[in-house]
Image 1 (tube, each protein chain N blue to C red):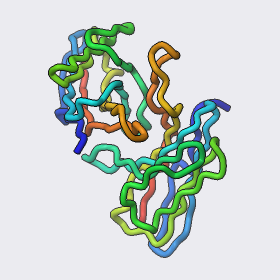
Image 2 (tube, one colour):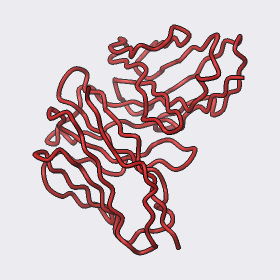
Image 3 (cartoon, each protein chain N blue to C red):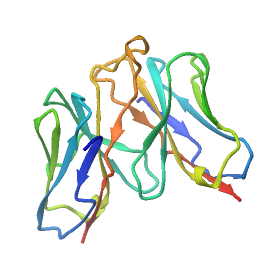
Image 4 (cartoon, each protein chain N blue to C red):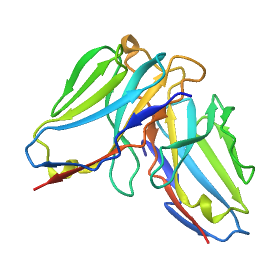
Length: 120
Length: 112
């Protein structure tokens, strides 16, 4: 299997549930990202992992907890979410540092198919 | 704050026309720029990347970069209804962990 795979594709959870989103990349990348995409808003960066170390955490509420056990896998653990957390959650991966044009070019991120999360 | 600005649209063009999508950015340190296409309910997919001033062509797509004016554009020639999607512009700064900054996206509608 190639590319970036996210599961599940859809998730409906109650505010008291605990669930996890999973992301797996088969591209040999060494950086992985979680983004949140809500209607009418730009993609919001949540977490960045580079070489399995969390390097950015953009003031995300503690009800979102990331985990990166190795460079190919990334999880987002969810608990006691709010209805406003309903959104499309996207995982992405890339090379880090970005490759220069002479080294083959910077191809930005490769995104997974996303998880459509609905909190009820 | 580093920002990437796009007109949200929708931009409506007839089939066969040239669609022109524009993007401006605030961070002069940004080195690389990307155009992603996102169909409704799907994830973004990379269309073009550009690093140098000028034009870069790939099939029906041409990306243009003007670092002095801090704008990036995407031209789609011979637009097709299948090009109807939201187009996201992103810039990569040359600092920190170089995470991409995305615009809100421009919705393109190509009518048959």
